[in-house]
Image (cartoon, rainbow, N blue to C red; front, side, top):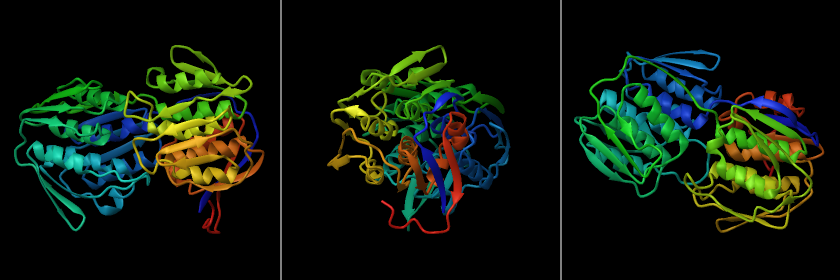
Amino acid sequence: MNCYIIEGGRPLRGEINLQGSKNSALPILAATLLNRGVSVIENCPDIKDVETATEILKALGCTVSKEKNRITVDSSNCGKYIIKEELMCKMRSSVMFLGGLLAVNKQAVICYPGGCCLGERPIDIHISALKAMGASIYEIYGSFYCLLDKGKSAEINLSYPSVGATENIMICATLSKGRVVINNPAREPEIVELANFINKMGGNIKGAGTEKIIIKGVRKLKKYVSYTVEPDRIACITYMTYGVLTGGKVKINNAPLTNIINELEAFSSMGCKISLSENSVEIEREGKLNSFGKITTMPYPGFPTDSQPFMCLMGTACEGESVIEETVFENRFVYASELRNFGINAVCKDNKLYISECHIKNGKAYACDLRGGAALTGAALMAEGESRIYNIEHIDRGYEKFEENIKSLGGKITRYYEEESAEGIG
């Protein structure tokens, strides 16, 4: 089992360049199916989820090449339409290929996607929306058999602003013969990015980032497109948290400042010293931190659920009690029980997490999901002495050059393969 061995208690100081956005790169890669041509995606993060996405593209008949952070996809020969279970189970975003396959091949066979175990994330919203656009979809023994003979105009009212469903609808509707309207869509920056990519390809999507998206289908798209992925907002928050809580000073270049306003306000309210420039953020801690009070996670533009594990860590250094209310995923607090191995007092009751100031000690813990695993790493960086984080494959799914960045800031972290089972940890 791969694990991190971390010698904590070292202030992290210095600057790093931020990676491209995981949550933008994945739907964009799925959308490369649409043009039956060549798509060059720049600033693609070198992470496991992107690797899985390219494996799916290859399995569907695409030619994929990678050079550093540039991925080139040629979808000219994409004629296959079945995504095997072993690929679907590697990540949640695998369901994003459904819309593209229906748009270009008019059929698809998929199973339920995998990813972090944050609770139920049903794909019924995806299915009902695609049916409204003319698709026939049948579930047989856990697999979905999907056909789209002739797409049609539709007005889709999402019961919940699902990011994945919004992206799937946008991708599928791009080549439709009608006009598709999405009411109550997700409004995350990654939705805007996907629309920008498809529009650069020759699509016609308006309203991304607002309460209504309108997609007018086009007959064909450009056979060549190049696009640069924006920086990763959650990775930015991760390294900012590490800098503050280890008593250091971290500068992050290529920071997506307009996309982290909620977190910047929270850090500022706690008493962190923040310096902003056109495309960078520098942060440090000055003495005791104030409690952030209560944070409630919500779909964008609310406070992001992906950032809340790092707010939990921040709460351990704040005077008074801090509260996080989770409204997006019912199992998002699964990491909290592992944080107790570091002496962190994080009590979960109903859908709220209560955090109070504590002295963090070294320990061992087991990563159960991507962001929770990164939060556990942060606790280990804070604690004096040696700590171990197991099941770090979750962290590999979303962070590029993770160990390298921490080391460049003065942290001591080593990847190690330990043959002994971590069963019982936590």
